Image (cartoon, rainbow, N blue to C red; front, top):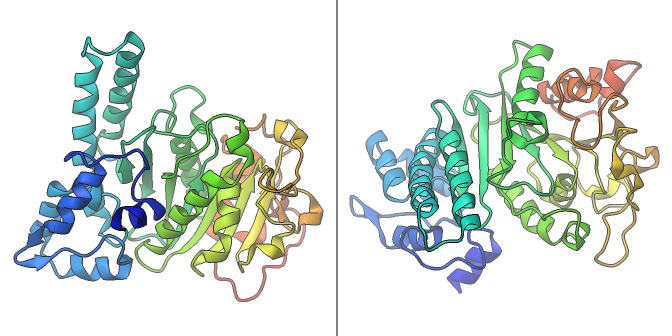
Amino acid sequence: MVLAVLLTSGWLHRNETLEPGGQAGQLQAWRQDTITGTDLPDPLSGPEVVADFFASLGHRKQFLLAERHPLVVGNLGGAPAEVRYAANRHALAAAREREQTRSQDRRLSPVGRHESSRRAHRLSSLLAEGRQILAFDPTGSGRVAEVVGDLDEAERVSVVVPGVDTDLLTFERTRLRYRAPVGMAHALYAQQREADPGRRTAVIAWADYTAPRGVKVSAATAGPAEEGARRLTATVAALPGDATVALFCHSYGSVVCGLAASDLPKRVTDIAVAGSPGMRAAHAGELGTRARIWAARSPADWIRDVPHLAVGPLGHGPDPADPAFGALPVAGEDVPGHGGYFLPGTDSLTAFGRIGAGLVDRAARGGEGPYCVPRGLPT
C-alpha cells in the first residue's frame, strides 16, 4: 500500500527497486530512522509538517539528515532550501561516482559506457560551485530542478516548465543554450532584473517530471502531464515564504500547467505559455484558476501546424494563442522557431521578464497599448 501511494504521488518511478542507494531504499531507511529519539516525518505528510519538523532541529541535525538520506531530503517539500541544496550535492556526487564507474565497465556495451560518461559529465556540471539544485532523482532518464537567485528572499518566484525531450542530459546545453531549461531560467532571471532591478526575484528551472520523448503518441496524450501536474502543484505549494508565483510553460509544459491550474495555490498569479499544443481546456476561463493566462506563438513555430483538437485521449484542445481562447497576448513575431521564446532580445522574453517581475501592465504585446490588470490579483 505504501509503495502504491509513493508511486501515485510521484515519489518513485515504477521500475525502481529497493536498492540501498536508490530513492526507494532511502525512503525505506528514512521511515525506520530517528534523530535524538524522534521519528522522522512521513514524506507525504505535507510541507507544513516537514517545515515544522526541520524548524525544531538545530542546524547541524538538519544537515546530518541531508547527508544520511540525500535523495529524500533533497526532494522533500518543506525542508529548508539550503538543506535541500546540500542534500542534492551529496546525491549528485554519489550518482556521478556510479556513472564514472559504469563508464569504465567493460561488461557494458560501448553505447552504454558512452551514455554513462555523458551522464557523469552532466552531473559534474550540476555540482559546480554555487549551483542550487532543489530536486534531483537519477532514476531512469533523470529528474532535476535548479534555483537561480535567492529563493528564501524572493518577492516573486518564476517557474520554467519545459516540454518534450527534457531530462537530466538535456537540462542544460552549451549550444542552443536558451532552448534548455537552465538557459531559459537564466535568461528570464536576467530579464526580470532588467525590468525591475529593485524587485527580489528567483527563477526555478523545473524539469522534475518525466517528459514525453519526441513528438510521439505520448506527447499527444495527457498521461505524462498528469504526473507532471501533480509534481508541479506540490513544488509550488512547498515554496518558502509568501512570494507570489508566475509559471512559464513551454510546449508540452503548457499541458502540464493547464492540468495543474485548478489545483495550484492562490499565490500563483500568472501562467504564461509559449508554443503551446493546448492546455486541455476549451477556453482560459475553464482552467479553474484566477491567475492571468498569457500566450505567445511565433509565426515561425511549427506548433501552429499541429491540429489543436481534443478527441478522446488524443490532443490537447484549442491553441491558447488564438484570441478566441481568451488568453492575454504576448508578442512573439521575432521568435526564431519553436525553441526560441527565451532568447535574449526577443519580444517574448521581454514580456516574460515583465510578467515575472510583476509589471503586468506593461507585458501585453510588449507593453504597447492599454491593458487592465484584473482586480484582486497581487503583482
